[in-house]
Length: 219
Image (cartoon, rainbow, N blue to C red):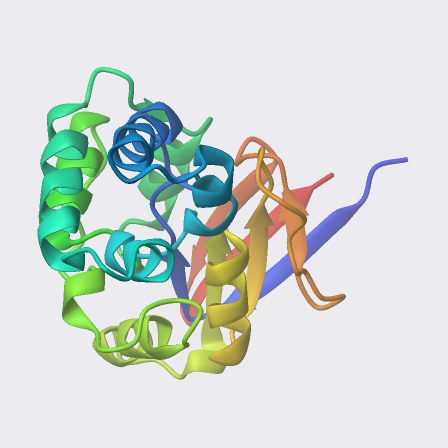
């Protein structure tokens, strides 16, 4: 028996990696290189790295390292790896349906890497994009999402967030935003009864209206 979920909102906010763009191969490759340099178990890295800025993970696992320099080297490797990037199914259609309304991207990437990945798969870069280098507190802190709402000139409670990482979902919930969790190969996601979860965007459709959007999910 099929079911339909419906969300009315003023603005849409999308995470980047794992939500709009499948960058898993590039990310794992960069962390494999870094873990080998520092003798850190790769599984330990991958268990905590998704959805967080690289520098925060580096500080946690290798506190003796120069986190900003290590992050710079990581980013150089990731920016050079675009051939393995792919669209999450129907992400391009979703953003096409969102055009003309209030929407943006909130990511734990720095701006250069975010723009590189969006452009590599043919997705637009919104002028209001929020990246890790623009905030003091990264996900799971709500600051990135609250900044996005302010840039879109909408109340946080009027935003619907699409996220695939536990840290991002927690950040959105702390910002009092509703969440659609984009499920993938990640650990269990902290979804509440007020939220929804989908494997990708093929069952998700966006309709523009005078007050923003109606998002319909057909399960």
